[in-house]
Amino acid sequence: LVGLDRGAVRRVVTGPGPGVPAFNLDGSRLFVADGAGASISVVGTATRRRLDVVALAGAVPAGVAEQPGLALTTGTDGPDVLTGTPGPDRLEGLGGADRLRGGRGRDELDGGLGDDQLSGGSSSDRVTGGEGNDFLTGSGGDDRLMAGPGADGADGGTGNDHIEGAEGDDALDGGDGDDTIFGGDGNDRIIEKGFGNDRRLSGGPGDDVIEGGRGSDRIIEGDDGDDRLSGGPGKESISGGRGNDVVDGGRAADNLRGDEGDDELRGDAADDELDGGDGADKLDGGSGVDKLTGGEGGDTVVGGPGPDTIDAGPGDDAIRSADDSPDTVDCGPGNDTVFVEADFPERDGLANCERVERIAPEAANDTTPPSLFFGSVAAELIRGTQGDDSILGNGGNDRLFGLGGNDYVDGGNGDDDLDGGPGDDIMAGRRDDDTIRGGTGDDRITGDRGRDAIDGGAGNDTIFGNLGADRIAGGTGADRINVVGGSRDIVRCGPGNDRVFADARDRVAGDCERISR
Image 1 (cartoon, one colour):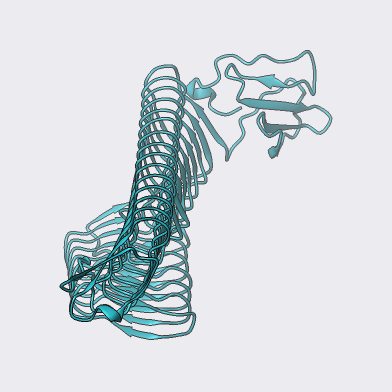
Image 2 (image 1 turned 180 degrees about the vertical axis):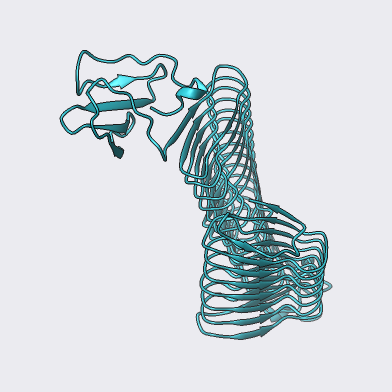
């Protein structure tokens, strides 16, 4: 039995003899006595799965033993502060406004009733908020955060996290890593402030706001409600669902769908596909070779610069193709109006358009993007510009140089060489063994998976080693370095007032001013 000295088990109800289960008061733990084998097993009641066995030499069936290596801590109906151990923990807050911190093992935290604060720690943890307005933090590792009913907040931290809201207006951030987030019922805000190529961001029913952030997000979906959905610099598939949605694809070649409702879709600069669906929609392809489909309803469709293909669909539509580019326009059924260049109206191919208006060419209203560079599965050398760049390496052993500006540099798969150059850069090595140099500026660097070599360079840098045995040099400046979890790391700080978070097995040099283990 664990936690007797903490008062976690107030009274144990036992059976009449050996082999009869015994429960503590909350019924969450099951102790099985085996008189013949002289051992005690701990079994979870939810799964009936055997967790561990500790042999007890010379024990009698009625004996009570304390099992090392497994921490089970239970709070009260009031406000509790529960802290885990370096090993795997299970912390249960029960009632009250609790604060639970798991530590460095693979932990399970359950806040229960009340407005709780839960932090899983550096490993891959499972954190459940329960009812109440809770805040859940995953920190390092691939975490699973389950918010529960209430207006909850969640931050996955580094790692590839799975986050779910529930009933209530939640604020969810996956942090760094390739995350999956479901908002659930309510008017949720899913804002990816970190970097990573997220698998899926789904708001669920309600009027949601979703921002994909940096990286290439695979799927963004709003579901029911009037949603505002924004992609990032990568290629995304974004669907608004039912409701009057605003969808902005961002700077790459995106696939945008409005679905039911009066939607507004903006492709921005790149080769995009926009489908308004049912309703009176507004579509703007922006620059690039775009394909725009209005669907049913009286739509307004703007092709933008570039040779576009427009299918307005049924309804009384207004199509604007006066952009100095040869467009192909099918107005479809209805009383439609198309606007073309006055000086070269025959440039566009028109069909089923009842009214044609000649106007002066219209300029694009694209957002001025930073330079965007995509790698392939092969090994590549990519150099940015002196401005703000987004560089995505993809597969292969790549060499990526941000040069000047505040750049985002992502190595993807492969043993990559990343150099941010001057500026406040955000850099991620991702998988395999990477070499990362921040250069001058206040950089944010994550090695992620693999045996990485990281040099922050001059500036006040924030560096995460994450998984693998990493070698980290902070460089000059007041740096913040986190190597908790993973393998045995080596850290040198350099000049400046530095702070290091490390495990006991990590080697931290004496030039690091503050060390937390």
